Amino acid sequence: MQGDIGVSRSTDKGATWQQLGIALDEDWHLSYPYVFDYDGNIYMMPEGSQKGDLRLYRAIDFPLKWTLDKIIIKRPLVDSFIIPHEGKFWLFGSDHSGIGTQKNGQLEIWYSSSPRGPWKPHNKNPIHNTDKSMGARNGGRPFVYDGNLYRVGQDCGETYGRRVRVFRVEVLTTDEFKEVEVPSGIEESSKGRNAWNGSCYHHLDVQQLSSGEWIAVLDGDRVPSGDANRRLILGFVSVLAVAVLVVLVGMLVGAVRCIVPLSWCPHDMGKRSDAFLGLERSNLLSSKLRLVCSRLNRMSWILRDRIRPNTCTGIFVLALTVLVAVVLTCGGITYIYGGSGAQEPYLLNGHYSKFTLLTMTYDARLWNLKMYVKHYSRCPSVHEIVVVWNKGIPPKSSDFDSAVPVRIRVEKQNSLNNRFKMDSSIKTRAVLELDDDIMMTCDDTERGFRVWREHPDRIVGFYPRLINGNPLRYRGEKHARKHDGYNMILTGAAFVDSQAAFKRYWSKEAEVGRALVDSYFNCEDVLMNYLYANASSSPVVEYVKPAWALDTSKFSGVAISRNTQAHYGVRSSCLRKFSDIYGSLTLRKSEFSRRKDGWDL
Image 1: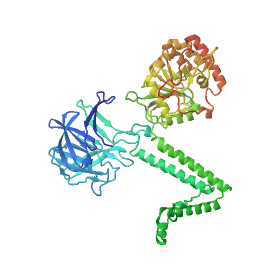
Image 2: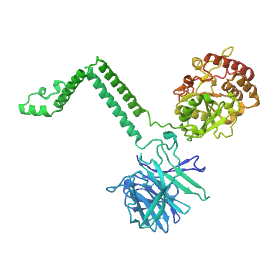
Image 3: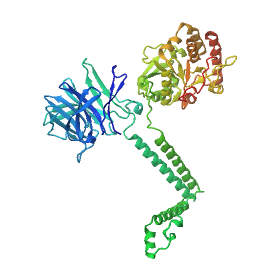
Image 4: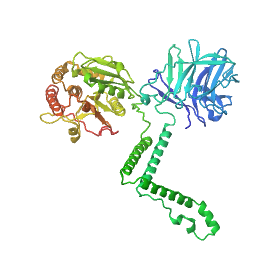
């Protein structure tokens, strides 16, 4: 719980970062490293309020070597900055140590002719001593734009550092100060906690580069401050409540009686005078415990008398109590072991990325689609949702409750080949082809995306199949499990390379296959697997096991494959024809349980 000041460098506008090391390590907590240059030197003024003062450090060898230049104010100011304005230097900071000070709601201003001091307090100090949600505490570097000075403040109302607020300073003199809030221009994501700053963002550093371009760094978190402690407390309170309910049920049925052994009582511990015995009996813990237990037993008799376990009322009360205990148990376990509830993306080589979600549907499945968009748009790595509309009157993008842009691509012909149509508007290399009747967790899609990023030349998906037999037969996942292997991944739930996959599908060699897809109105995913296999002798499919997946078409009855036997028969015919055209898949078997992370078990 002690912070140091570290240094990272980016040469590509923040896309990648190189960790350079620790710049400053003191015996107390450091944060908010405000860096500026003055008189040919580079200075840093970090927060070190635990030390009880505000210190100014000068760079000996920027950015990793610093020396203490001066203690400029002997007060525990937090989140302070210095800025020149109209011939003076102004220091803004918060001192939470005073009596009557509103924590995270106080702001003071000091002024001087030099950043090294001496500093004089503003005549209106404290400038703010108000509610912590009002942005009084500084939240980053001040900046000047179009001749106006702007200050960034922290809104700590809901949690520490919930969001930043931006204020335009209209008056700043030694006697007066006035600022007005202006829009920050930061749009809060509709993804909630699944967004990288879904819970809080409390520091904004805006600077203008020598090129004239503006750049900003904004922090963020998915988890509010103190969330781990809160979940632990709620979890143990739930477990304790379950224990109380178990005892209550035991007392109700007469299985639990509170009895204190006589050996605990003072009159069994040797000879005592009557005076001492009376004193011990009234004061010792065993006597008090006996009294409590006797009252509890009396309560259990009263309960059993009023609520008889063998009556309808008694059975109802017992059933309700057990139900509450089960709910509390599940809740307690979730609070203790279930995590924060935020779905995070998975890193690969220290970086994150995004993918496009593409689904194909028509008017009869609109209710499916709305639920689908609302759910998947909130997954962390989803950049855009593309809806390939094959038939009927298309909806508007505004019809959906979505956290990301939704693009409706209306097709002229109702063809399953439209799923893989070349689309220059797709900006991500990764595309998750996912049927609109499949619901799975965001964590499953994130794991699949992580695996695809390891193997972008493969079809990475959630539904494996093993194609074998003579003649070839299409069978379900149980067949693949029975033979411990697979050689096909259904692209109704799979990641593909948007450039390579779509180009292959619309190549001249796939023309005959596309015609078969149109004639059968089926098998577009089977064709894609054959095209991938033809393109490489290396493994071209990769399986990721979802925690769970729900097929919502079972409730609507509008699935193409609702007649499983007929559907499998058509696909078996496809297999035999595609094998004649593109070669066999039977020798391309991959085994389950190959991954060290266990995601393909």
